[in-house]
Picture 1 (cartoon, one colour):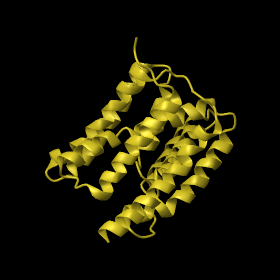
Picture 2 (cartoon, one colour):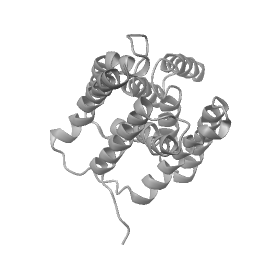
Picture 3 (cartoon, one colour):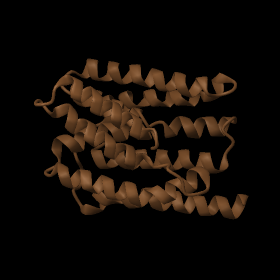
Picture 4 (cartoon, helix red, strand yellow):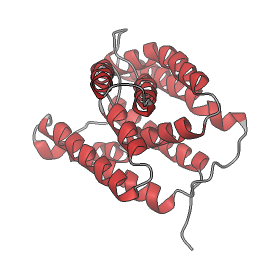
Length: 233
């Protein structure tokens, strides 16, 4: 019998992976075996969030409220992420901001009354705006592809992996030497884990599971920033 994870369990797995990744960015040298392993694990986060963004888009009762919730917590997370990322308040936003834009991209993708050129223009604007956020570009492109090919698993994961290959190349190209950036290959764990171990079931619908990530995300960034400030100055 294959071990299966429901949506809540998979979300908590991703949250743990994110925490491991952020601890590594704060305290562990990137060019080290430990840093490599921790960042490899952390690659579960952005792509899986893109997958769940599509799930939420398809199943939420009120997309406008979903969009508002992402927008509010993107704003709440702005200062904690900015402090964690660069040590001061800048125009640097976290992954919730990028997912907010990703949700808008899904709304554009679904519109049948928009001319193709208008869709392309809107997607381009969203991609540019996403550069100010964590997982910029990718958490716009992945959700759109996952939604577009939602009824064709082979095409869905093939297109996902093509974008994943671009991500690995970009990270490795910017690393010196290049192989120190190959922790980005952890991205390819996502289609395996979701296709093999995700049950498709929601799990408990207790509000705690719905709100935990939204609260945990800015809170853990702020705590890590304060710890980094205390121990590293």
